[in-house]
Image (cartoon, rainbow, N blue to C red):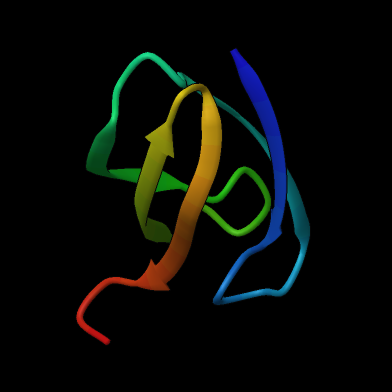
Amino acid sequence: MYEHFFQCPYCWAEISMLLDPSVGQQTYIEDCEVCCNPIEIQTRFENNELLGFQATQIGQ
């Protein structure tokens, strides 16, 4: 697992998330642990290296 830190696009709180580098590319929804708003998470890994990460508000 890969620990990644980012800011919530709603409340700007710093969030820590565990990402699975064995999945090359994925998109999923996860709620902010602080404000509980849904965040769309997009990740892209290649050779166990994080090449892309995006956390966006739903509907934005």
